[in-house]
Image 1 (cartoon, one colour):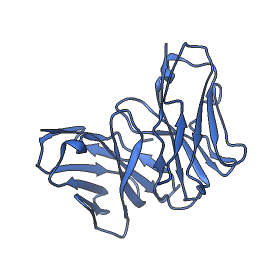
Image 2 (cartoon, rainbow over the protein chains, first blue to last red; image 1 turned 30 degrees about the horizontal axis):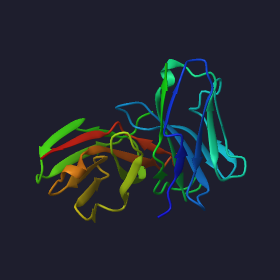
Image 3 (cartoon, rainbow over the protein chains, first blue to last red; image 1 turned 180 degrees about the horizontal axis):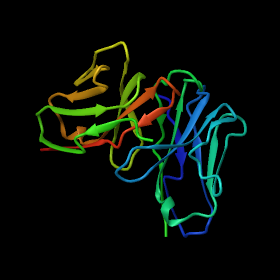
Image 4 (spheres, rainbow over the protein chains, first blue to last red; image 1 turned 180 degrees about the vertical axis):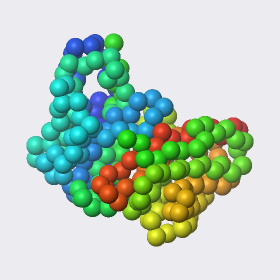
Length: 117
Length: 111
């Protein structure tokens, strides 16, 4: 069964350093999501792509976070510089649903747990 | 902004008992989804119920939806130790088609 791949699984970094996370969605899924999940809370959408275009980044802290999906397949989320408050789980998901359509099932990767010291 | 709110925040039951979790939301929806998350892992989709449906089953799972009360419940029958996880509801508000998540119910099944 096809899965969403993410790497690394764990990342420890010092504040002010740069970090990057990678996601490879299920083949054929046009829509890709990056979420941040703080321990004990639900996922919070950071950015949504449809193919290579950003369709929603209203919750992305753009002063330090950036995301790209250059060829409309895999995606990278970057934080520069990292702050202590960025410690969280970063989840990637993909879906067949297109932007502006009724949301269908989202398929999640295993996540990257980030710890900023 | 948080659309769905799960209740209770935490639930601990004996193996073999039934577990019921509730989700309330604020605005009209197209559908409501339930997901499971094992500790430190990604979320796994369990079931999707559309706004014109009232009940749906999948194995030991039963989901109900009451759009007049803006609420849903997830029932897990004959619980097992492997059901220990956090359970999240997510709603697709019909105004902006975004999936909005609750804070989850942490379920512990005691052997």
